[in-house]
Amino acid sequence: MNLLRILKHLLYPDWIVRRAFPAPVMARIEAAIAASEAGHRGEIRFAVEASLALRPLLTGQSARERAVEVFSELRVWDTEENNGVLIYLLLADHDVEIVADRGVSQALPPDYWAEVCRSMEAHFRAGRYADGVLAGVAEIGRRLTELYPRTGADVNELPDRPVRL
Image (cartoon, rainbow, N blue to C red; front, side, top):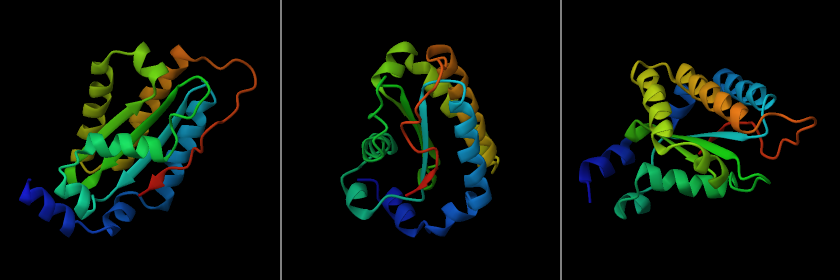
């Protein structure tokens, strides 16, 4: 049990998410996801969370484990071609995690996701949260376009709207 991490999460205010991602920024992210998905059959979701609750902290839940949980809660796995991707940001840990459904993750090497995360985290360290997310969406969209090019009328299976948890 990491007492410093627990204390940090418990003292991390929820309003920090609204400050880092105000409504206009969330609208830009939603528009970027929609524009990206216009070029491919993949599905991208973005979720941001200020901190974890006490119970997950006491059990030692990592940002990665929480991202997998959110992936399930948002039903990102529920696409016909198994091509959903979640970008999850846990602000208290300064951690971004990307969870891809089995169709996408089988097509791309694991180090690809780590590279995208590192690129996004560089923006976040500089306080450019919107730029980091938009860069991540653009890069993931580029790869989804290669793997799942749009073929005629495409059904948008998941909402494009970002989620504040």
